[in-house]
Image (cartoon, rainbow, N blue to C red; front, side):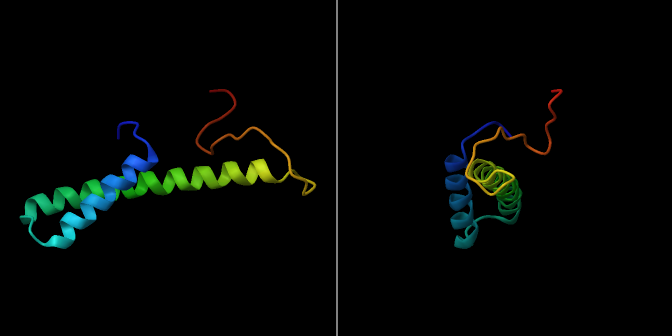
Length: 80
């Protein structure tokens, strides 16, 4: 999936849901829209999870104090 913003992805997902709920799409087109929606949903979910982890890292250090630490997503390593 091309790099697009979370907001744009969410808006596209909302549009797809509306199109599917309308019931006016032929089956073949509805399936393609559904597949696109699943990909967008997964992308949005991953972005939210990543953001939640960043916020958690920013808010608490190992002593429970508010501190800022660098965030490294799980799928990245320091050697990259």
